Length: 242
Image 1 (spheres, helix red, strand yellow):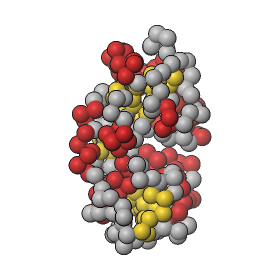
Image 2 (cartoon, rainbow, N blue to C red):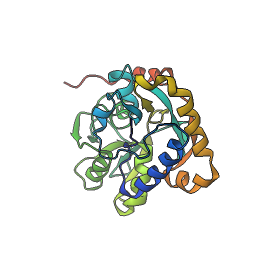
Image 3 (cartoon, rainbow, N blue to C red):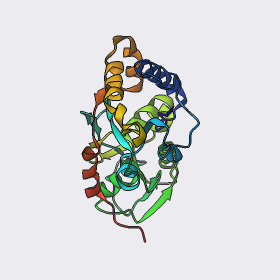
Image 4 (cartoon, helix red, strand yellow):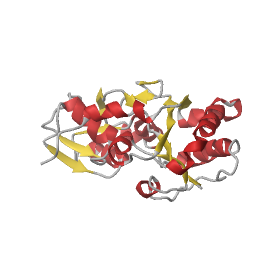
């Protein structure tokens, strides 16, 4: 079995994610003791030995029909509540975002970076720069290579911690729709362990001994979402690119 929590690959958070998983795995018989940090995330989502993975909400509802949803973290960030959050729309100027501006997008499979942006703009931006990562979208806007971007709420907070000078050059000009936080998932082969994995996460994030870890990871709690909680995301489907 393997476990991965790789959607926020910030160096200053790695030890905290390791400690969180150590507390969770200690409550699960036979679980891997260590997180696999070097996995290719998109490949990992399809591995039958995946006991724990983390994905984006959009691939979950469009590309991953078989993975089992464990739940999501209730995140401590502005405009986040009950396991849901809004992405952060940033610009290099204090003006409202509009479709005529050049948008930096981490990827067209991103709920927070692409789907949420199109929802805010009322359609696809006229021009875009694909960057491959939220951090690179932030950099592109800060450096003037793009005008706007939609950034995952937690990525924005973690970047503000690790690169304050860069983030300080941005203006927050809006927020995306309220959507469920990144889903924790497992391979269908482990579906019978869903109740105990959920219980392990709920107990770990409520453990006072992990209060410092959860504070650093901006985790307030765990919400046992199901796939049905993510299916309404399909209503946000952006128009096709031409």
